[in-house]
Length: 198
Image 1 (cartoon, rainbow, N blue to C red):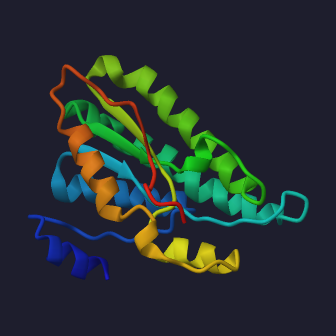
Image 2: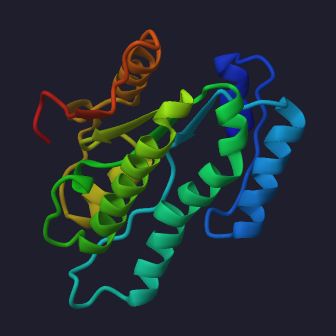
């Protein structure tokens, strides 16, 4: 599927690397392979992770561990691995967070905790690397039309109406506009939600 997507978007020299986000060894291997094949890194976008929900009282602690590894530790480690290359290119780093990284709600406490932690990672990183010419952007999208969101709606017993949600293109357009700004400016945080309420 990733190979097909890379072909469809027509990005020159696109490469597809698959890794288990909970494996330090695989993440380090991906970082090494990117540097070996590309030789440089201009932009790092963290837009993957997992979502699990349950009341805090009954949520398995093992689920929280999985969320932590995929949603916080993986971007933390991958950033560490690629930061020297990003420093050389005065690169940009994007963290695609979640609206629950700003305000927690019932049933999503463990997922929300990882998003708050990811926010802390991004804010700290920005404070540490801005003076080296690296911009750091965090995006907090609301519910976005996706397979994951369809599963969430199903688990909530609600009808999934993707047209009423943010579209992936909405987020991509916002990111491109933010990242294309002249280097005299930096967008640090973007909150984006659908005009229609699901």
